Amino acid sequence: MKRTILLATVAASSFALPALAADKTDVLATYADIAAAAYGDSLITAQRLQTAVNALVATPSPDSLNKARAAWLAARVPYQQTEVFRFGNPVVDDWEGKVNAWPLDEGLIDYVDQAYGGASDENELAALNVVANPVFTLSGKDIDATVITPQFLSDTLHEADGVEANVATGYHAIEFLLWGQDLNGHGVGAGNRAWTDYATADACTNDNCDRRGQYLVAVTDLLVADLDWMVAQWAQDGAARNDLTADSDAGLVAILTGMGSLSYGEQACDRMRLGLMLNDPEEEHDCFSDNTHNSHFYDGLGVQNIYLGEYTRIDGSRVLGASLSDMVSSADAALDAEMQEKLGTTMRALAQIKTAAESGFAYDQMLERGNEGGEALIMSGINGLIDQTRSIERVVSILGLDGIAFQGSESLDDPNAIFK
Image (cartoon, helix red, strand yellow):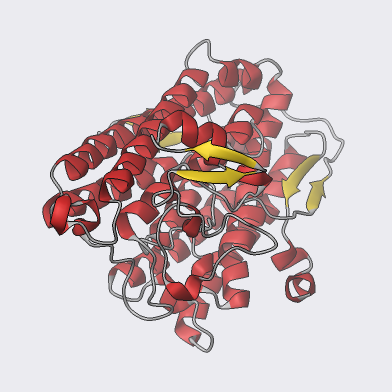
């Protein structure tokens, strides 16, 4: 879900640059190749998720639900590494909200706990439960949702009434349908949806199992189609690749805008600092599955990938090429060493969060007020991301680029505004 942002503008220094070790066009080509590979891996893992979802709906069981959940978790690994392509690439920005928007008012989609509440002034559809209601009213019109299709989800239900919290598509809608609400607060455990929510006849729990399965299949099919479209944008003659390479300096601006904005405004601020300020377990990115530690880790890895010009594919092969690191090293070797060190520091901090969560200390537990150990882990990641952003600002200057606007956030730029 988009939040109000402030822009931190990075002004470029004016001086004569030394000859750069890597040609700009080669650096842009590596970046585009990594995008093509990472979105390609995202498509492959989404197709595997699609197979698992179809199996769950066709033959519901504890095993088929667990396999679908495992496929969803695997699909997040490459996708999170693509988030660095946001902010600087309009083709990605205009598309991303369909596949990874959050947080969502899950009552729009399916049943929720009574404590969730109902419609509000901000969102009249917050508790619509389209799974249980094949006909409903939207903007004064009767909507026929008897058959839940990808087109219905994309064109009618997603961001219905212009409300960004009405997230009806993408990874997090699928996550909710596989795990259900996480009702544990800061306690142990993720969502615990029963496999019988997809069962047939008398075995069905919480009613409307056939429509729930219909929704799950449709939203997964839509995710696969959306990712397939994005893969084409980064192909050799794709629109995103062509936009990037049309002007080499503008292409470098796009790369660094993505790195700085994801590091600072998006990850350090909106995804990490805000949740810690509010001590709110609902502010974790993958809140139904308790997978936020992995989302943070692979977001960070995506930034490092782009700077170093390398990406490891899900089959173990690697995409390697001319990089920003090569360019910066030839202009200022000390700055390149600094940038690599700070990226490494951030990744170690994010790895500590990941390791702690995988050892039983979940991210929503870390967010609990007074949990000093959790706060220290999260703040270490936040500080690393902020610190590396300062070095990204210096990279902008050393490369002699025009001013770049990184996404900011009230959680760091104006924290008092959060509580107004």
